[in-house]
Image (cartoon, rainbow, N blue to C red):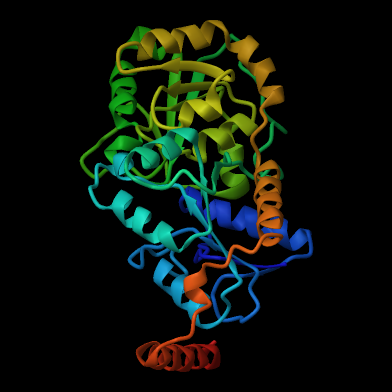
Length: 350
């Protein structure tokens, strides 16, 4: 099978969508499938549309590019749209409608959480031909090897990490925790480390702040701590808490977005009214949740197997949209010739 993933993969620390593309690509290659990150081949079996916004650095191609490929090159290609973004995450007002419009080119839709799927269903996306596949992290990097559980004789070390520096990433609670660490009695019990980018107007004076990390460096730094905190608001899924859970850290997680779907049963949930109470609750039940983490189910292998199984099912069916099969009119033939010329130039450059 030849699969095109619509992501410009970045090296080093980046967002969760980038990690998804890396993990899925590597899985497919190990399974002896062909993987490309463009639409230059004529014999692509499945196109995975991951980021249709042309303005995004991670976008390898848009839904318009997919439409032209399907119309002019290969009408039998199966198009799957992975939706992992929404307006609610960053308080924008244009992303959802853009994704709903982009989704029209897809034969099938995969959402990264039930919360996100329900949100888009309410806003007009079709419920047909869709499912939820939860995300996962690389088990070769994020695993409990070397993690030392809390001995009860030292401070309880709390950690979180984010690539994005948006306020909604959880800074309401992170700044609250930073302020509490200014109190000596609280500081005797807890320590807080933040890994990643911080909004320019935020200063964490009582927090250990570390520049963004990735791979083994990130995994090792996470495992230097005891519990993981995520306060990210309206997060469709998020990779950060998955990586921590795979490392063996019990989770203190906010009741917001898709996060509870990943964290429930592996830590303590909190809301805007009971953050500190729930922190102490997790402290009291630390050993219990440490043992539970031995059975944490979400990882990139399981995720990738679900994607591949879905692809195999889809290509067994004729999902070709009739509009792509009809005879082209004069204007469309001209558009096709221009498109083919453009593809030829790009191939030469590549």
